[in-house]
Length: 137
Image 1 (tube, rainbow, N blue to C red):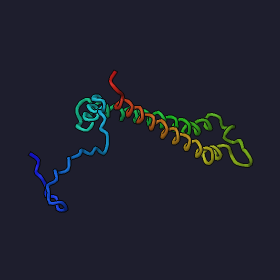
Image 2: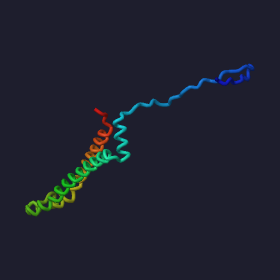
Image 3: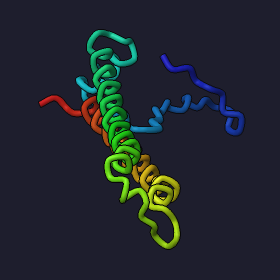
Image 4: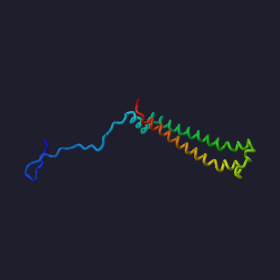
Protein backbone atom coordinates (compact mmCIF):
# COMPACT_ATOMS: atom_id res chain seq x y z
CA UNK A 1 0.00 0.00 0.00
CA UNK A 2 1.24 3.47 -0.86
CA UNK A 3 2.05 5.67 2.06
CA UNK A 4 0.08 8.90 2.20
CA UNK A 5 2.01 12.11 2.81
CA UNK A 6 0.43 14.91 4.84
CA UNK A 7 -0.51 18.01 2.84
CA UNK A 8 0.69 20.94 4.85
CA UNK A 9 -1.42 23.58 3.03
CA UNK A 10 -4.89 21.94 3.16
CA UNK A 11 -4.56 19.64 6.12
CA UNK A 12 -5.34 16.54 3.99
CA UNK A 13 -3.13 13.83 2.61
CA UNK A 14 -1.47 13.68 -0.80
CA UNK A 15 -0.42 10.46 -2.51
CA UNK A 16 3.32 10.08 -2.99
CA UNK A 17 4.68 11.04 -6.41
CA UNK A 18 4.90 8.21 -8.93
CA UNK A 19 8.35 6.92 -9.61
CA UNK A 20 9.63 7.52 -13.10
CA UNK A 21 12.41 5.55 -14.71
CA UNK A 22 14.93 7.80 -16.39
CA UNK A 23 17.03 6.31 -19.18
CA UNK A 24 20.08 8.34 -20.04
CA UNK A 25 21.16 6.37 -23.08
CA UNK A 26 19.82 3.64 -25.25
CA UNK A 27 21.70 0.43 -24.85
CA UNK A 28 22.09 -1.35 -28.13
CA UNK A 29 22.90 -5.00 -28.36
CA UNK A 30 26.24 -5.62 -29.91
CA UNK A 31 27.02 -8.51 -32.12
CA UNK A 32 27.72 -11.50 -29.90
CA UNK A 33 30.53 -12.69 -32.19
CA UNK A 34 32.30 -9.34 -31.90
CA UNK A 35 31.96 -9.41 -28.13
CA UNK A 36 33.16 -13.01 -28.03
CA UNK A 37 36.23 -12.15 -30.16
CA UNK A 38 37.03 -9.15 -27.99
CA UNK A 39 36.68 -11.28 -24.89
CA UNK A 40 39.03 -13.88 -26.40
CA UNK A 41 41.56 -11.15 -27.07
CA UNK A 42 41.23 -9.68 -23.58
CA UNK A 43 41.35 -13.07 -21.83
CA UNK A 44 44.26 -14.22 -24.01
CA UNK A 45 42.59 -17.45 -25.09
CA UNK A 46 44.08 -19.59 -27.85
CA UNK A 47 41.89 -17.93 -30.48
CA UNK A 48 42.81 -14.44 -29.31
CA UNK A 49 46.44 -15.42 -29.11
CA UNK A 50 46.30 -16.73 -32.71
CA UNK A 51 44.72 -13.47 -33.89
CA UNK A 52 47.38 -11.35 -32.22
CA UNK A 53 50.13 -13.67 -33.46
CA UNK A 54 48.82 -13.19 -37.01
CA UNK A 55 48.99 -9.40 -36.62
CA UNK A 56 52.54 -9.59 -35.25
CA UNK A 57 53.59 -11.86 -38.14
CA UNK A 58 52.10 -9.47 -40.69
CA UNK A 59 53.92 -6.51 -39.12
CA UNK A 60 57.18 -8.46 -38.96
CA UNK A 61 56.87 -9.57 -42.60
CA UNK A 62 56.29 -5.95 -43.63
CA UNK A 63 59.32 -4.77 -41.66
CA UNK A 64 61.53 -7.48 -43.18
CA UNK A 65 60.37 -6.69 -46.73
CA UNK A 66 61.02 -2.98 -46.39
CA UNK A 67 64.36 -3.63 -44.67
CA UNK A 68 65.36 -5.67 -47.70
CA UNK A 69 64.34 -2.79 -49.96
CA UNK A 70 66.59 -0.44 -47.99
CA UNK A 71 69.46 -2.95 -47.82
CA UNK A 72 69.33 -3.61 -51.55
CA UNK A 73 68.72 0.04 -52.46
CA UNK A 74 71.50 1.54 -50.35
CA UNK A 75 73.74 -1.50 -49.93
CA UNK A 76 73.68 -2.19 -53.66
CA UNK A 77 75.18 1.19 -54.54
CA UNK A 78 78.75 0.34 -53.37
CA UNK A 79 78.52 -2.93 -55.32
CA UNK A 80 77.36 -1.02 -58.39
CA UNK A 81 80.30 1.37 -58.13
CA UNK A 82 82.72 -1.52 -57.57
CA UNK A 83 81.41 -3.36 -60.65
CA UNK A 84 81.32 -0.22 -62.84
CA UNK A 85 84.22 2.00 -61.68
CA UNK A 86 83.63 4.49 -64.48
CA UNK A 87 80.16 5.16 -63.03
CA UNK A 88 81.79 5.84 -59.67
CA UNK A 89 84.03 8.49 -61.22
CA UNK A 90 81.12 10.33 -62.86
CA UNK A 91 80.47 13.84 -61.59
CA UNK A 92 77.16 15.69 -61.52
CA UNK A 93 77.31 19.46 -60.91
CA UNK A 94 80.89 19.06 -59.68
CA UNK A 95 80.00 16.34 -57.13
CA UNK A 96 80.97 12.69 -57.54
CA UNK A 97 77.92 10.50 -58.25
CA UNK A 98 78.54 8.13 -55.28
CA UNK A 99 78.58 11.07 -52.85
CA UNK A 100 75.49 12.53 -54.44
CA UNK A 101 73.55 9.27 -54.26
CA UNK A 102 74.64 8.26 -50.76
CA UNK A 103 74.72 11.75 -49.23
CA UNK A 104 71.71 13.43 -50.81
CA UNK A 105 69.39 11.01 -52.59
CA UNK A 106 69.45 8.44 -49.79
CA UNK A 107 67.52 10.68 -47.39
CA UNK A 108 64.39 11.13 -49.54
CA UNK A 109 64.58 7.39 -50.27
CA UNK A 110 64.61 6.58 -46.53
CA UNK A 111 61.78 9.02 -45.88
CA UNK A 112 59.70 7.38 -48.64
CA UNK A 113 60.36 3.90 -47.23
CA UNK A 114 59.43 5.11 -43.73
CA UNK A 115 56.22 6.69 -45.03
CA UNK A 116 55.34 3.46 -46.86
CA UNK A 117 56.03 1.43 -43.71
CA UNK A 118 53.74 3.57 -41.56
CA UNK A 119 50.96 3.49 -44.15
CA UNK A 120 51.16 -0.28 -44.66
CA UNK A 121 51.47 -1.00 -40.91
CA UNK A 122 48.36 1.07 -40.24
CA UNK A 123 46.56 -0.86 -42.99
CA UNK A 124 47.57 -4.14 -41.29
CA UNK A 125 46.17 -2.85 -38.01
CA UNK A 126 42.95 -1.71 -39.70
CA UNK A 127 42.56 -5.14 -41.31
CA UNK A 128 43.01 -6.71 -37.87
CA UNK A 129 40.42 -4.38 -36.36
CA UNK A 130 38.00 -5.13 -39.19
CA UNK A 131 38.54 -8.85 -38.63
CA UNK A 132 37.80 -8.54 -34.92
CA UNK A 133 34.71 -6.37 -35.45
CA UNK A 134 33.36 -8.21 -38.51
CA UNK A 135 29.82 -9.50 -37.97
CA UNK A 136 29.22 -13.21 -38.27
CA UNK A 137 28.12 -14.31 -41.71
